[in-house]
Image (cartoon, rainbow, N blue to C red; front, top):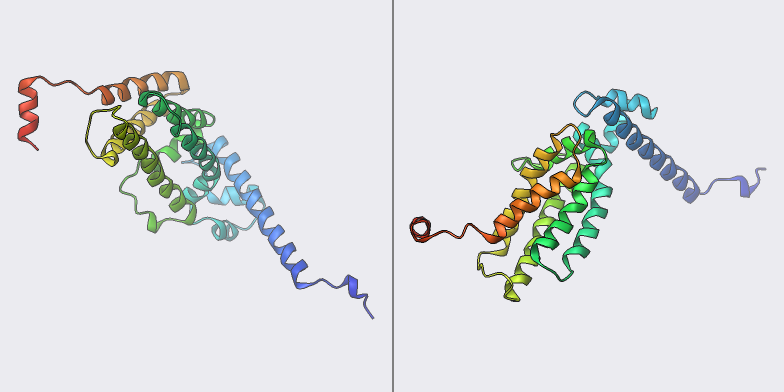
Length: 230
């Protein structure tokens, strides 16, 4: 008769399966990161990633919808941490330009670590027309973060309006959209450089955000032309 203590309980078997799944996921993520860094996102293939992770190629698609989903899987947890830090930054007191720069600097510093991964990820962020419902779970999670960024920035603008620290009565969501649009254009231009240096990119971003906050101070003829288009 077998020793009862030697028999595996259903909970033990479930624990083993879960650990095996987590180990496969860990290997897939590490393999994807390594292959993307070595070959570049465009050249890398899911078959090569599967071979590096020592799993069947079909196993890759249990965890990710496609290659883009694998890329998002790598950056999502990192960006969640960046967003959490950014949210704390935006709750501080201080000039609007300084709050915006502290918020976006976190992202610049993160993207600068591995441009081979950052460039395609930022491109995905900038794809406003992408239908996230057609994407994998990790990609949908990536796109959902964008709405959180808009909301956080809109809250800061609203607070500044309520404190009478900015005079514009434009909708906070619209102003936040302007800030994000400037950031997305600038970060893509910056990442296109062979060696993107955060200080250089942040200086350019600050100049444009400052211009957006100050406005162009239009004179009479320009104000009239703007009024006629409202």
